[in-house]
Length: 123
Image 1 (cartoon, rainbow, N blue to C red):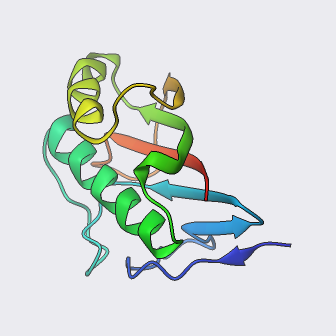
Image 2: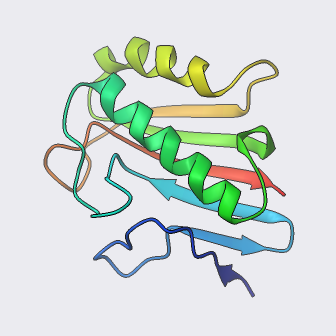
Image 3: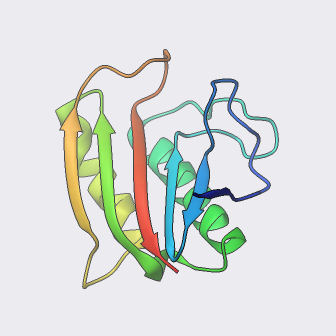
């Protein structure tokens, strides 16, 4: 079993939970959305990545942890040219030793989304 974590971030309209806990494992998925309204934060990759990692930080704090608890990030980009910008922002939020990370270039479901992440943390 797992429990949904109430993060204070606007819920998705899709049938999913944004952040869940199973024992000490917390899984959290994010796009660049305004946490209060749920509206997409538009802009370049750095703008979107910064919002995503702020949302992840908020979600982990609601789960009793922090970004320091993140052990893995799965990142989904729509354009490989966005990777350097994402990495610049990533370094603002994470430091060595960095979480394990896989980055994939793919189509994402909603127009305007440049990046989506899935994080795993041990809290």
